[in-house]
Amino acid sequence: MHQIRCPYCGVRDEVEFAYRGDATVARPAPDADEEAFYRYVYERANPKGWHVEWWHHAGGCRQWVKVARHTVTHEIGATARATDPLEAPRS
Amino acid sequence: MGWLVQSGRHGHMARYSAWRLLSEGFSGHTGWERAWRDSAPKSAYDVVIIGGGGHGLASAYYLAKEHGISNVAVVEKGPIGLGNVGRNTTIVRSNYLYPENHRFYEKSLQLWEGLEQDLNFNVMMSQRGVINLFHSDSQRDVMARRGNAMRLSGIDAELLDREQIAKLVPIIDMENARFPVYGGLLQRRGGTARHDAVAWGFARAADRRGVDIIQHCEVTGIRREGNRVTGVETTRGFIGAKKVGIATAGHTSHVAAMAGLRLPIESHILQAWVSEAVKPMLDCVVSFGAGHFYISQSDKGGLVFGGHLDGYNSYGQRGTLPLMEEVLTEGIAMIPALSRVRVLRQWAGIMDMTPDGTPIIAATPVEGLYINGGWCYGGFKAIPGSGWCFAHTLATGRPHALNAAFTLDRFREGKLFDEKGTGPFWWAQ
Image (cartoon, rainbow over all chains, first blue to last red; front, top):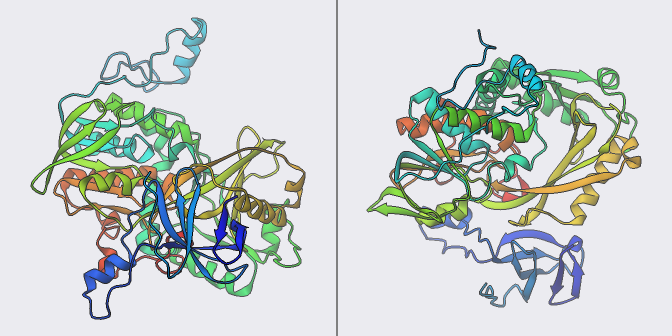
């Protein structure tokens, strides 16, 4: 069981959250070309190690939370509010 | 004469047969030779395949058999067969909706049907039938559509009603209050095969045709000159290659990144379980349609079952308990008798998830570098067909008609094959 520190609610079990994917991709400007949107929608770094990702606290405060999580050990690192920057730890 | 002991290409590789088993019995089984050579890497090959799982080994076998290219190495970082080919629920079927998918998987199923004779290895192929249950009128429509699509392509599919299901699989709770069983879609030619034996059988058969299977040889880099691949850096030195095929599903992104590629793939975990051995209670593969749960009984008596992905990126090969609780709950809803059975083991494989749930067997933007990956849940059943198509693609530089749709570019071009219709969310496929 992952235990995720929600910046609003504190440490909660994984079952309260819905996973929403890679939080490092940024939506291109509306006038960006198709290639930029292709990369945004489809291409992923898919790291074996630390991954900064979205978890929606759907069974709690309903806020979106940024979480640094290790994709091999399943260790949860730092978490942040959606609008705050969060760097992946160096592994 | 097929059953007579014959010398293989390397002398020490005699055919397996009932006669051989009998004669070995008289000499205390001391005459069995190793099933494949412990090859050391040569300096260069025509084709190097990265990954000694089912797909890599099958690709090497069909390169040698169908295309006469036997100067091939399969490099594997550990012993063969310990990755996803040994981490699945061994189900074999071709019951897909889209023609691009079911034609490919049907080719694979046809290869499965003759695999034991072809490889001279018992892969314990058992065509016990695969049933997908449905629990509402609208789900019946969806199943009927899929079954009809399959039949239009000449693939067997039968829509069964309630009574037929109750007769065929009496252990199912037909009267579940929330999800009563309305019927099921049956593919009689589907079934199960023995996972390990598939890896061993392809390894032995490829080896007999001259393919080098190099174990404990991890690829650490892909060498290029300009935009052309020239070989792979490994923990056992550089190995030159005219063509390199990546067959490391679960880790395709990781290996492709060595050639500077960023792929539309995420790695997710899929758990599976086996129960203690019980007396025969289930003689087909059956899946629950309200949620996702599939189960079969192994020849040893263990109930082998699985469900959804855990749903987050992971290379962890284990998974967590919430998903286990969900899967077991669905299992008990379908077969209440399961509540009295103890789980013996749990494992997880790393799935290369694509945004449309369809695989990739294609050339890459790097000349001479090819990818076989993105298998999502479909990897095990695809092994022979995938190897067959990948061999064709590697040998000719062009896809076969059966894998022509499984390109890397389809996402850029909008030509997705989203069987499940969930949109570009890897964890939802």
